[in-house]
Length: 178
Image (cartoon, rainbow, N blue to C red; front, top):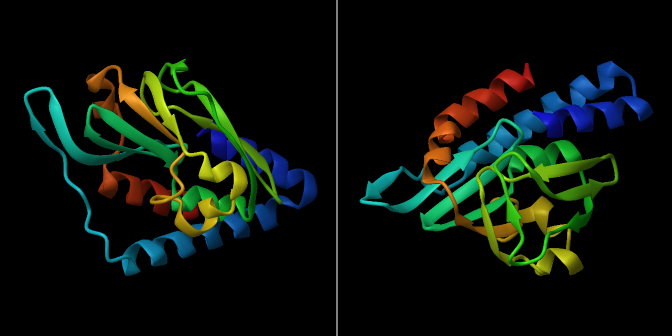
């Protein structure tokens, strides 16, 4: 939510509110069309003991969290990258940094706006995607695959239950588009 508010604030400094609405509506439509055309299956959540097999969760601020075992791969969604436009810079934390859920761990800058990126869950950074330093535009072409931002060691598995699943996130995006 804070990410979208930041984007809207910056956009309105350069455009009218009407053009910002059009931008988000168009971004939502593009994202939904891309999601429908995508051949990737929707992943479901399966838990065995304390080990969670590949599951994907989303925040209202458009970060995703793909959990495989005790590792969460985190980045911004296709909806977020479409709203931001051409990404020109990504600021990432250092490995071993620790973050609480909803704490800013980095930022993205585009030709339109800048936005903080928030940790969907608490945890310690295991790895950062160094490819984004040299090629931030990768976020535009592969936001939810190759352009992940960080890998976190899951700190509190219970926090995952507070996030949205794929169907809930799709509904959230549709509401924001209208």
